[in-house]
Length: 142
Image (cartoon, rainbow, N blue to C red):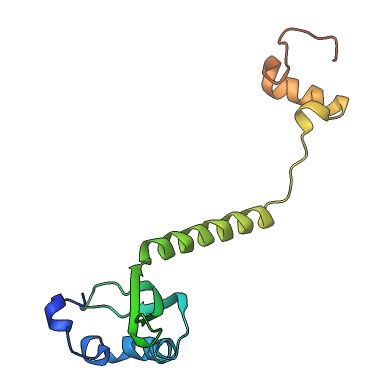
């Protein structure tokens, strides 16, 4: 955890074990969990651990830990890295934006190959031969 062993975490406050900018995101939830509140699904941004490495998006759950008498002993924090999910959501959003933009800038094109006027049908036959007709070789429509 945090690049250190479990033993290194024992007996030390969270503020010493994580970067200050990460602790600043956790602290309000930790304090409120110590007062009995639970917070499932809190998104936390973890800065890049090293130059050139990507930052991470984490999903954290904060819950008070109680003894048999119901007294709060501490806080249980569960953290899951959801960076890949967030990247896929962003890629989907960009894909949807691209599709929407493509549809907006391209006006609908009428289907003149099958529903056009007689003149259009003659033009198509001149340009395409019999390829545009469902039954090549039949001239009953022209």
